Length: 224
Image (cartoon, rainbow, N blue to C red; front, top):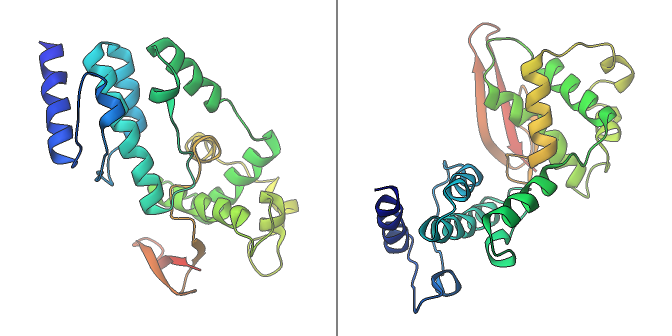
């Protein structure tokens, strides 16, 4: 039954994503043309790998193409991958994914990113997505040639955040630390040119806003 469901899902993915298939090597002949902006494609890929069957692997390959398309279309900083075309078995793909997930950041970077998220959006009623956006603005600045290229230097830049000397004394809760860790392991969740977070409009336009009904303030996330 599970194989039949995956088979149907594969057919639907090809039909509704604008993909075309020829011959037996299906994944070699698919061109994905659309994606769901709200879908967690990495989670879907991992689910397909857990199944490990032939149909599931084909579905996983389509998910990977859609994930790459989403990253390019939204300008996300996450890594473009080719797991399903580079490796042959679920075990090999899972090993490669795990290797890529290993921390590529220092404890100091985690401490500082969690601290600035806590400082800017640490109230318990503020949702996770706002914390992720706050941290993503910092990471986008690190990647932008218009700003310093380390988290510490971005935070220490005059007139922007607060000096890191004071951030080390803050004690973020577990949720904030995990949100910071997620960003450092997976990259910014915002388009790369969203580099402003403030209580007023900045830059060339507003990407998203968050109104805090308890504090009566609105946070703007804005484009460069």
